[in-house]
Each structure stands twice: as C-alpha cells, then as structure tokens.
Image 1: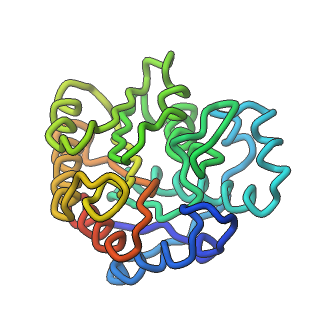
Image 2: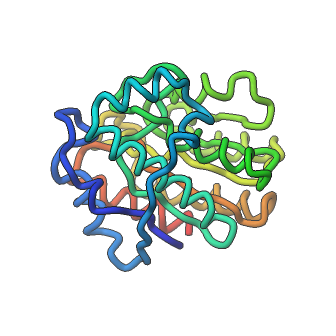
Length: 243
C-alpha cells in the first residue's frame, strides 16, 4: 500500500474548506506508518483528456491553484499506475469530482480521478473502469465526464448505504476500481451518516471485489472531509480496509 503525497499539498491556496490549514496534517498524523511516494505534475495534455482548452486556460489564470491542481492530477495518475502492483491512495488537494469538462465548482479545478482513468484507457492499459464515490456530495463533474462513455461507470453511494457499493460492484465488469474518497459523510462531519468503522467496511468491500474481478487493481484519491478532529481517523480506517 502506497500513499502518494507532496508537501506542496499542505499549502493554504484559497480560503475554501478543502484548503484549510490543518486538514491534511490531521491525516498525516494518522498514517505515518505507511510508505509515501512523491508525485510528478501531470501534463496539460493529460488534463485535456477530460477538460476543454478553455477550462485549462481558466485554471492557468490562477497560477498557484494551477500548480497544485496539476500536481493533484499527477498524484492521482501515479496512484493509478501503482494500482497495477498494489493499492494506492492519493493524498491530494484540490479535490476533483465537481470538475466537469468545461467548468468546476465545489473547491475543485481538475477532475483528478477522471483524468487518471481516461489516461489509463488512452494508453491501452485498461478497457473498462468503475469509479466508486462515497463522498457526501454527488460527483457531478465525474458523471458529466463519462455520461456517454460506455467504458466507465460512475457510482455514488447514496446516504449511509454502504452495502450499495457491493450491489454495484457485483453487477459490473471492469479492469480497475478507482475511488473518489470523500469523508464528509461521517457523523461528526457535514453529512452525519457514517461511523468511523463504516469506512473500514467500505475499503474491505472494494478490496474484495477488486481481488475477485480485476486482479486487485484499485486506487483512491481524497475528495471531501473537513472536520479535522475525525478526518485523520476516518482516512486511516478506510486505508486499513482498502490495503
């Protein structure tokens, strides 16, 4: 199990909750016993696998955000490559699942998971992927990206229905499982749905189906989760089940 991380992600690049000070630090405190690897920025060409040239230029007009967003996309791409040998978790920000091809909102700029999946397909490494999103909020950007792409199925876990992930994964065929890992459904975060141990169960479900159906290939990237007193424990709980 590898954690893909760069210290640049600790920068407070805006005033939004995803960029708040102490957020990623609370996660790092809980997962220091895992092996960390550094990412490289993605290329603009990688971003253009999902986003329009106009959207890319829009983000480039915010130089510091662009620098971090391109690194977050690169970190998720690196996690997707590691997944062919072992599971990986991209500990990144900005998040990505509200970034559509030509727009973004909800603290997102580039759709990290979508870019990584599209790159695996473009390189011929996979034919079919599924994306599991357990963030509090529906990943409209991811859904918009793949709405007409039969090679990728996007699933957002409703409410606190952890078992719905099993129902989805057992009904699909796929070469890899990509995960938008948001932790804002916790009972002490914005959503108030899940207990910490539920994240371990989510991780275990994804692990089991990946081993059964796609040779264990699985990776995740951080999306939401904003209450630092519980965020680190919740991320560790997921990783413990996922690894």
